[in-house]
Image 1 (cartoon, rainbow, N blue to C red):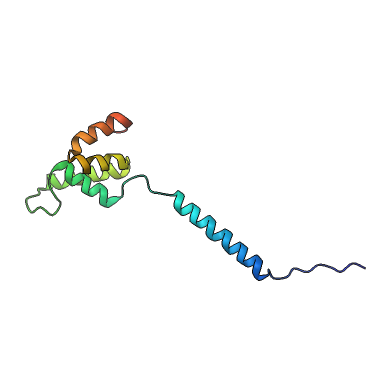
Image 2 (image 1 turned 90 degrees about the horizontal axis):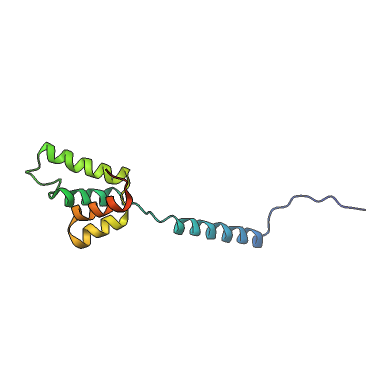
Length: 109
């Protein structure tokens, strides 16, 4: 005579394996999703270096603010890459780095 199987709750070993697999998968996903584009703070810093003045500068004109905003927006929407930001930080020549970036990627006119 055959006894019908019933669904039972998973054992603690099964739950442990499932938890381990879930945590491992989550860790792999998080480690594999390294952001490649600069974020808003980096783009704002690049824009300030590019135009040569800060947003907090009391002598910044509305046109200067617009120039900062335009470059920050361009950085975020193209998006620029970390190599451009690193070049600008290390050489302190953001315009030259931007020209190299344009030649390398052909993304920005």
